[in-house]
Length: 95
Image 1: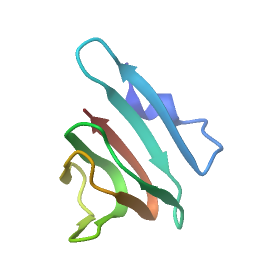
Image 2 (image 1 turned 90 degrees about the vertical axis):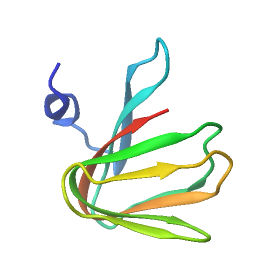
Image 3 (image 1 turned 30 degrees about the vertical axis):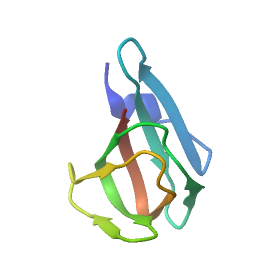
């Protein structure tokens, strides 16, 4: 499986595809430059990994700039957060 090929023909501003569901969930997600994944909460611990691009992860108490490929941020459960793309960005979300 090639992750870049999975998202190659996306046309939406924000798009995600589940790629593993057996023991957890792995989601491949793309956010276009200048767009924001609106505030939401995760029901479990999660790990957001920047594959390409540049993005800002924000919670009420902290902000994490993801700017180098493979930068990560741990997302605690039940914490409201959002992700904004400063450049077209692709992520893996594992939870």
